[in-house]
Image 1 (cartoon, rainbow, N blue to C red):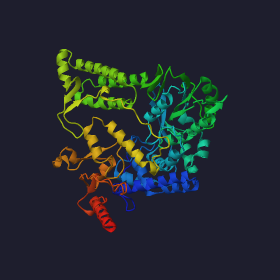
Image 2 (cartoon, rainbow, N blue to C red):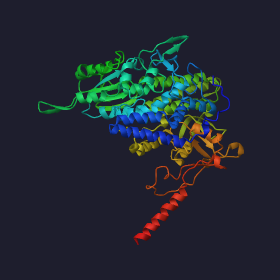
Image 3 (tube, rainbow, N blue to C red):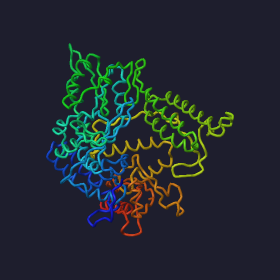
Length: 613
């Protein structure tokens, strides 16, 4: 149920009138100052900057925007309220007050796990989620500046692929450690000690205590929460990461290389963690069993946690182990990372479930359902030695599709079925596809199925351990990584990739990176005669797209200008960025005059040359 609202009062800010570039700039500046203060050891300054950020209008606006655009925006809490309209978002923005704030109990639901068990999720209300998102922005720079270098879960710009590449770098050499401790924490989120959190997390203690002790409602009963952080809260993954940070430093200090009988000896203890799953390497099984494991248990016990005996085990590299959907194993001294059998089976089960549940669907609709699943799975494993696995999966998908075709036409010959559903494209035969009758910006020409074998195997470059997305000195590094990521993930999607390149990956409304969530906007609407050609299209964030239509802004494609602009500021120097223009002063987005900038630079250079002469 959505909260009913009337007309906005005079003291409320209209949602679509918010200047998002200014909001992002203010928050990012404060986060950068927090990182700098941490590097200088000025923790009183950190606390003051956190307070400034959490009381700022920009921080509150971005917090509301986050909870109304993420995947959980349609999932209500116990009050059954959602923030859908611009009016409700404006009222929500004014409701984020600290004085008198009291969170409501969580709504308990259950989702199935891979092992057949159920995972409890505790859903906060929209207002509580927004407050958590607000404090997340103030706490995340601290977590990034003080976190373990080889921790990759629930961290911005880090992924499972980075964790797997880290494992490969540690284990691939001839002198690499041969034994691996596969660790898993039993009920990590559910058993974290509240006392440890309140003593060690650098944020306002009264507010953190309220979140931890709020309780949850299941059915019609209210249950207290004496331990753990709720799975479903925005800030919970960040808190869990900060709880587990520090183990890598303890292991490095305890197992340094040393000299034994005049020779250098290294126990080769390395640590890789993704969320609550981790591996620790060692030169021998005894080191892991007798020295490493007790230290891990002691570290976790201080935080109210313990290892899961069911999932924690010690394995030799020649036997191999599964980690994050991949299997790492040495074959005759050569390490290979392949998709695990369990992961491949789960993928095929999903493909078969889609084909069986869409027996009467059109071919184009079936392809639209299968392509995101197949492309996502293939891109996830494109950095592994997955060539043979991709071939096998492509064959199994073909069998499933052939059965789907035969069921639709039980009395037709195989040749007739093949000619109807499978096309020849270039030198490739048996392509499951159909001619596209309705051209859209996303697709044109032939609609064809994406096979795993269409994905090229590429080696992934692991993120640097010290890289911090909140530190300005790493900005160029992360922009370059994002460019490689987008160009690889959009391989084969020519339309989207072309638009992304034309805009240099920047949304023209809020000036932020466009990563994985966007809308395609027609500069001239189709009902007014606008085409689907590239010059009439631009990528926008969903909220920015709504703002353009609400404020009747016009998005104008710029003329690409090639020039050397190293002396300009970062935003002023990107001449190919799309700009906004409107018919009146009320709907004009004020951006730098790039032509004037170039003219001024050239004029100054000419004056300098005359002065020297």
